[in-house]
Image (cartoon, rainbow, N blue to C red; front, side, top):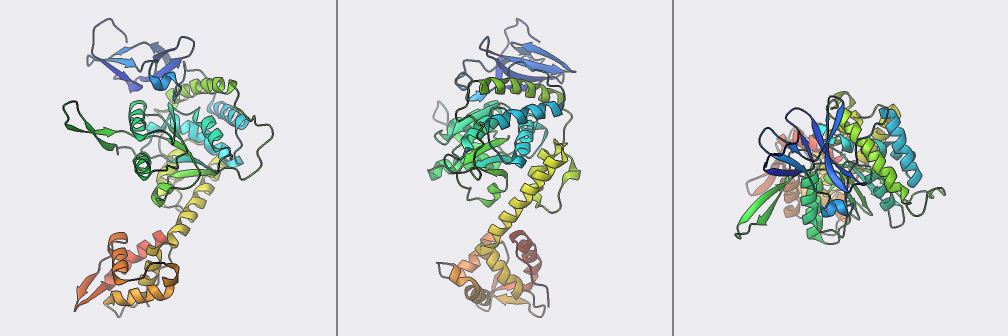
Length: 433
């Protein structure tokens, strides 16, 4: 694959070659250099560069790259054999148990999420993993230990600015491992939320505007799709974003006495060895793995099924699948409970009842406002006005209203749409009487 021709070069962290081979960036600690490990038909070869039929030369991102040099991006060394997938799972769990204290179910979830990061590009949607707790709960320790095994893990914290995060995710296309995700400043938080909102579904890059050397605006697309693991104290305000996370609540039990207070140096060496075995796992499985549609759970929302089925599809252990399903159902119930306490849910409860009379063609908005204020007014600090309720109807629930004879009304034909929204917000719709 190499030649002495003077070809235009392209630095990259991974590539699928025209002949079907996979090339992955590796870092060899003994020689402190980066190379490509290429895999095809069960054979691994190592390359300093790869020449393409198109006349370009692929070059590995240099070992002098600041992120690689300071271990902000963690790479495997040369691929290593691991026996069976069951053997590899056992090694990962042993490593995790040595250094972190997680709930029994979450050990299995974290182990398989690590595997998912190494084959994530075989899927179009992904869940995120989260460790949540107060300072001293062990969430940062767990983040480091789990993140150290993930595919091209990029380690960052809330002290980082968002611009290098976009560039690093776009360049390496690995796993975003983020500590202290509770941003203090609203502009930084908004940029971070863009990464999480766009990053769990393939094909939704984040567009950012740069200024060229000629002072011209130059919009750029940054690819942020990929697995993400975060540690934080609280929750995101966006309920849709919350639904993307599988969460472990840290600090809810006494820490095991056999866990070292400080991570020993050997942990990094163990993680390096496991990353090399996980690279071989990627080589062997990424081309043959895919969605198992039979794992869709009708008891869950379509959003949760969308992000969970990829993780479930790489799991052969029924007990671990059951643990993930239980965690998903709890999350779904919590989200529905939160939605049921919102103004939108309260309005749907009132509206569904008002629209349940088939003898009526319309319901006056004034009647809806009065019923809302009587039933829920004491729960709100703001006045319940026609403007407020009308805004909820139009901009949040997208239900129709119109003005007739000087009065705003909601047509009875909106009941079908309202009933669908009731199911989404955890409200029992009223039947036609």
